[in-house]
Image 1 (cartoon, helix red, strand yellow):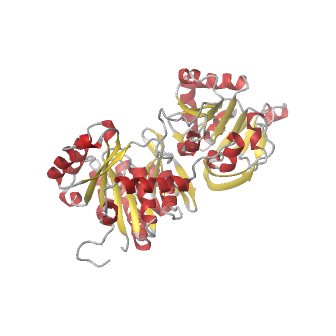
Image 2: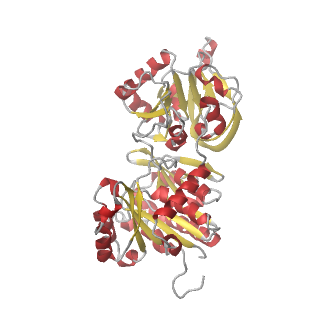
Image 3: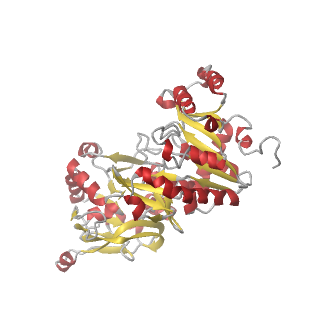
Amino acid sequence: MSAKSVMVLGTTSGAGKSWLTTALCRYYANQGLKVAPFKAQNMSNNARVVTQGEIGSAQYFQALAARAVPEVRMNPLLLKPEKDTHSQVILMGQVNAELSRMAWRGRSASVWPVIAQALDELLEENDVVVIEGAGSPAEINLKDSDIVNMRVAQHANAACLLVTDIDRGGAFAHLYGTWAMLDEAERRLIRGFVLNKFRGDAGLLAPGPQMLQDLTGVPTVATLPMWWQHGLPEEDGVFDDRSKASGAVTRTVAVIAYPRISNLDEFQPLKNVPGIHLKWVRSPGELAGLLPADWIILPGSKHTSGDLAWLRAQGLDGAIAAHAGRGGAVLGICGGLQMLGEALIDPHGIDGNGPGLGLLPVVTLFETGKTVQHRQARFASVGGPWSALSGVEVQGYEIHHGQTAPHSAMAAAGDVAHAVLPDGLAWQNGSGNVLGVYLHGLFEDPAVLHALFGASTPTLESVFEGLADYIGRHFEAGVLDALIAPAPGRAA
């Protein structure tokens, strides 16, 4: 193994592992080093298309931050929850039906050789590999089947940072408790504690960091102030109260947040468009509080029929239909497009049968094959509130089961779905206010943002540079470079 490895562990989910890993990728890349990210196992319905299949969105962005080409070795195992007790298993970018049927604990022995090989290859090919853990490394009930935290850290001999969310309270206890539950050999890998999301006077933390170091021998190497608008999509969602960009609100966008919502990261740019208020909605009451909302968006779903049933149980189907009936703009993306149609037909047991919302005269047929690909296409003539998209060339990606086509009987009766992108990528109703697209990443395309809003948002490059600068300013001097320095007594 030629590369040095730095690993970001967390005391809990949501502590800040993903964004800190991204920041480290750009920080080390800016030193002229060849850098790659790695996360052995990710559980998320936010995924991106790469050449060999799909990986978690967080590793995709980390690769871009590292100035590397995203690829499946960077996230060899991706779990996409479909139900509370079942996930679709993606191994090296491809759906693995056998692993999807296997019990959780039984997968470790099968997948570890693949994970270890992917990590070893990245270590051989790069100067630095920045590794992200999952959840907490102190989940003692899962320790015997660990394939993502300390087993990975020991395999790579990684210099580990342990990050905690101090805004939640109990940060010192979280850090000490996590450290105390590790084995002695694992503790030796912990090189520093990081206090994330701090608000207030850092001087008031004393004597906590020194007391913690006296107990563990591990220094607190950074206190990172709360930073709401860093611009990087959250790994597992953007459900917050700060989804309003600068300036007076000129357009309210309601996104229906069903349980198996997927690819939330594609809405991050909307949070940065001046005048946009982006609201995540789970009930008719929340939607009524926004009305008249300008747009309602039905996003992607990992389980379309299940999320459609949930939507109906909440009474949101009627609220969406009423909005559309008033001429309000409705956009469905991927699974949201499928929901807007007349019916879901599933002869192979992929997702589920059922009636759709009936707002687009189309039908979706689920097939065993999964479409996973990048796409570039040009909008034809688009009507209604989406007319600004006419003629706009867009880039994005597809990740879906099922193909959607016009409802033949309705078309014969004159209710025709208008194809506004080629190859069944997008459909519009006759009045033009309802639009469904299979293409993810629409709002990440500068041409689309300019057409719809006359605006641009910070580029990913500027976001990555901002992250690198941020940790460079807030980590103790020399710490980040020391993490990748040769061990004492060894040549570089």
